[in-house]
Length: 317
Image (cartoon, rainbow, N blue to C red; front, side, top):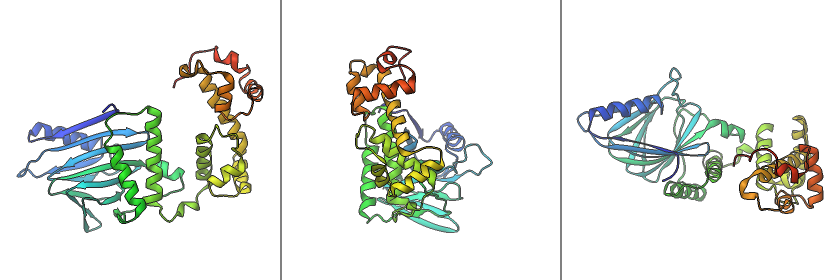
């Protein structure tokens, strides 16, 4: 696999146990305890998809407990979404113990005390979701006990299948695609797991603007992209969308044109687009005519697109 990844293995070697414990404590923010009478091999392999951490864990005969805020490795700014793919795990929190068998999907917040008990071998796929990304989407989540997800729900089943599909990848896509995959995972977890009843519809202005801007970036080449289309995509009225953008000193369409020009500037300086005509770049970025594109581009960057293309160093892809 060509992802930026890490892998750690625990076997019967006492030295390996020390290394494993140190990494778990100082990198993953977890105290790890073993049963010296029943040593067993464990393995964790992890990588990132954009902002999302992705791990495959094969664990046996150990317990994991999160560290507190006194350590730099504290994980309270993240949520762990865990899919049990084989075996079972017990989770102790608030004086209660819950068992999660194969097929279970649950969410656990390391800001609160808990203990995971692997008395036999279990395999899990674990997503590490930044809480900041959820807050941008209007979701505030912090619960002291694990959230059990209804595995009978069709949306949950689809989300679980997508997680397993991503876990089975053997060839890494481009960095941009990895980031998009991470964003898709966050949205799936938000809507299918954390907020299935669309409570996030009552979201903050910042979250609304974030969603509007993301829709704009995804549809930048659509010549029909206007305030009404953007408002419909984020489920508010055009008037409300205008008010929210004005409160931050802008308008939806001003952002659209700025985003189109920024995308065009990137394409003009990108090596893969060297043979693409300025007319084609204009169309790709949502401009109806090359003349309109050139006029706005010169206003923004101080020179026409043809001169801009050949000046300066290539932009990073």
